[in-house]
Every structure is written in structure tokens, then in C-alpha cells.
Image 1 (cartoon, rainbow, N blue to C red):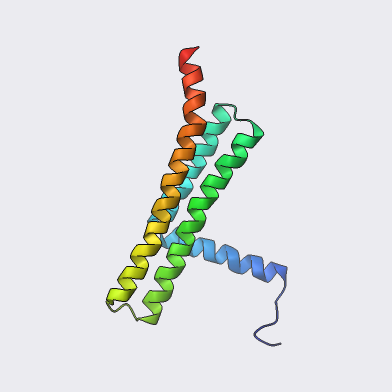
Image 2: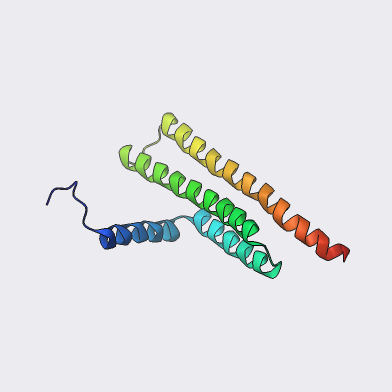
Amino acid sequence: MSKFTSGGYRKSLSYALQGLSVAYKSQRNYRFHLLIGFLSLLGGILLNFKCIEYCVLILAISFVITAELFNSVIEFALDALYKNKYSKMVKMAKDLSAGVVLIAAMTSILIGIMLFGRKLLILYLY
């Protein structure tokens, strides 16, 4: 079997789950984003979100988690390539990828304010 041949869907799923496990064990910010995402979903349940509101919330959460995973990929790959030695270019690349996560998180916070703010304001006023 060639290294380019697929080992099947189960094998692919296994590798993906192993990758998520590595991220969970090694990345504090990933765990934080998962926690906030879970709490946001719970808040949506408590505030009786409509289907479209859940969809927007899930997209916002997955946007941040995906950005965090890509950030981790870039950090791991560059650390491996440069054997954990300092490089100004590596620092710039890592800073840029961290900036992507920051933009994703800020966008998701704004979405959260729009989704939760309206619901909470309605609850507070009535």
C-alpha cells in the first residue's frame, strides 16, 4: 500500500480524534475556548434560542476553535522545522497566527453580545 493511499474512514477518523486529543492535552487556550463554547451553548439552551440563533452560535464557536487549531498547527510545525530555536521570522508567523485567533474570538464575542444581549435585555425588562 502506498503512503498516499487512504486507510479508510475509520482510520481517518481515528487520526482526527488523536489530533483533537493532542490539542486538548497540550493547548490551554484550546481548552478555554471549548469551555466557553460549551457554556455559550448551555446559555443558549437556558435562554431558549431559536434554531437560527443556535446555528449562528455554533458557527461562531467553531470559527474560534478552528482558528485555535490552525494556530497550534503553525506553532507545532514551525517549532519542529526550526528545532525550537529562536527565529524572528518564526516569531512573526506565530504572532500572526495568534492574531487570527484574536480576531476570531473578538468576532465571536460581538456575535455573542448580539445573541445573548437581546435575550437578556428582554428578560430584564419583563
